[in-house]
Length: 107
Image (cartoon, rainbow, N blue to C red):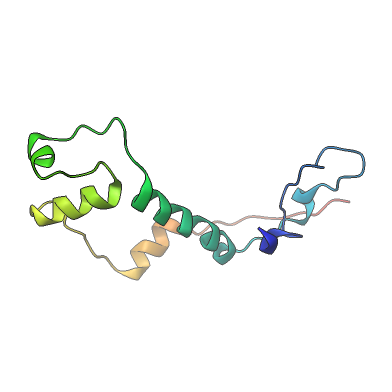
């Protein structure tokens, strides 16, 4: 959290007369965002119990927990859920699409 200070972090004083509008100073880079989001995704995949996930009889027999990482591990052992690979350019086109934009800073 400390790394987000002065980069657009919205604090409890936002909206008060003395609280500054952090949106005007937001400066997160793609890498800053990744440092925040990737650990959250990993935590979700390793620790989130999917209460409503419909376990199959085979999953129940094999005592699979409805946690994303466990489901993937079980599926791969069964020959399902094969991971695919693709060129870096394809990844970049999907996650970092090229856009033309014009930014104007008003005071």
